[in-house]
Length: 405
Ligand code: MET
Image 1: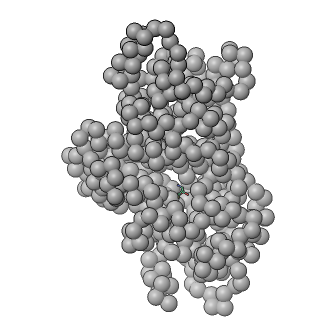
Image 2: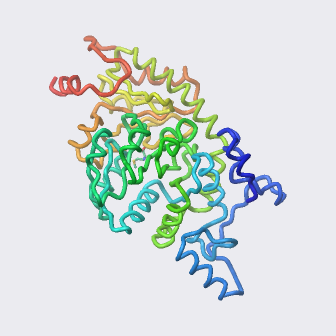
Image 3: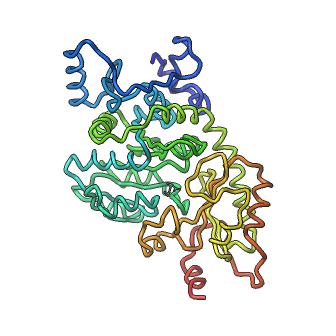
């Protein structure tokens, strides 16, 4: 693509979201990006193909021209990668079949250097926690508070990993301070919840930015994907891992993700406005113990109720009772039962994922309609009001009192 990078660098996120990855379309006489479903790419020049395979194996650089075979790359997926890299402010991005495939590729790339130690900050999405804790890819993990990361680093530390805002508590980390504490160890920030509309972690010193593209990037609950935005040197290693292990993003998914990016800023801002309003109303509600809403904003709200959280889930009628997030419809789920079920109970609760916590992904519905549904789902007012902090992180003492009661 012939993008003028000086101009592109100066463009606002709203403009990039609409135009990035599509720079060549007018020249091709196209409006919608073409979908290339090829698994293989014919060539009468086997010597040339051998050279291209050798070059890819040696460098991981995306092949010029047709990619030989679908596992080396795909032009439709490449458009999404180009666009996401521009939105995150990185040189490159490498897309995968899911967020977990993307995280696995980062771990494999680092472990291939002989370093298997990872320092991570809880909470993380339950399956990310599980992948590190269970050592399925040979990882040895040390869990640390953000302030303890520097002390947890070892000569064989391959990676520091954090989510901010974190899934599901929406806890935030000072990314610039954390990046400083990491020194030369790469910092991976899962930016799924904030999206590049609200936060660009590389500007704070992160080397790797992870997304479950299934969520806000896709935005409509109809595509699974993952992506790592990073410098080109790391992207080359990720492409080699992707080629060898096969966790590729399907071209149709690439098309849908590029299409989703175009509306990302308007979706995120609209849903964030509604989410902030709902968080404020929940914080004033006597049936709600605690509300978690991040300073960076966003469309995720977490809260704890005195009512049985399973009953609240059972009573929603407009809100969709489902795991996942980032869709146009509002979703609610109980992390201790679903998204974080696989994390051992003690680890879950000690990282703030209480059994009372509900996590809501606010969509694009009317705010009053959503409030009416939440209001009826929360049930009758309590006979005995409980003293309640407002919007803040978990209060361990109060939680203990409630558990004992
Ligand atoms: C399979 S459970 C979780 C899916 C998604 N990562 C979420 O947090 O909702």
